[in-house]
Image (cartoon, rainbow, N blue to C red; front, side, top):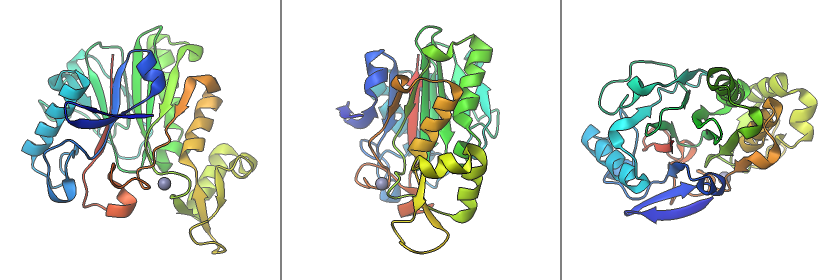
Length: 275
Ligand SMILES: [Zn+2]
């Protein structure tokens, strides 16, 4: 991934999407107007920051990306595996009008000029782009979304709705908590074993005994990047069409908000993708 400053806003971009010329980014904390725990590029409404500041932050990042803020379409994330098809009537959802839906963790569209937006602070952003059919998708994949394979749901809905071919789809895994930072308990691991198969989960290194509390029973490190890559491969995406971030939201507090570090008193990062 590349870190760059545009119009005073620090953003992260993927090499593969950049080469294909698709407008996208993952936000950082830097370049906004919010203060205190929200300093400074908080993109989450309803986190305690003023709506005015959040709207200003959206304006700044829209300018940095070169997209129309009023044509953004926001998710309503509740750790589901629901993916919604967005039409031109959805442009502006969550920005110029209240959201007309709930429980939307993934979105796909073929509407040009509409920017899909999803929100993060350690969970995994998944980006999808079909340069042949000109279709994009963006999905929020925390451990629940990953176990439920929202990445696969997104790809299947792109194929079903727009006739995309699996071999054309590019997938990117964005900044989120890394395998050295993400400790989980046994009950989470059991769900991963059920979803991916016990052997694969342990032999691939997707799950290893805790390195933060070595020797403590029932504690594991979970690699959400590898898990989501596995979901993509299972869905039929070829490895060369998958790009994985090297930025961890927990390792880099100077760049990102991390839920594990800051708890609920923090801003939200966001993923942006636009045809
Ligand atoms: Zn980390």
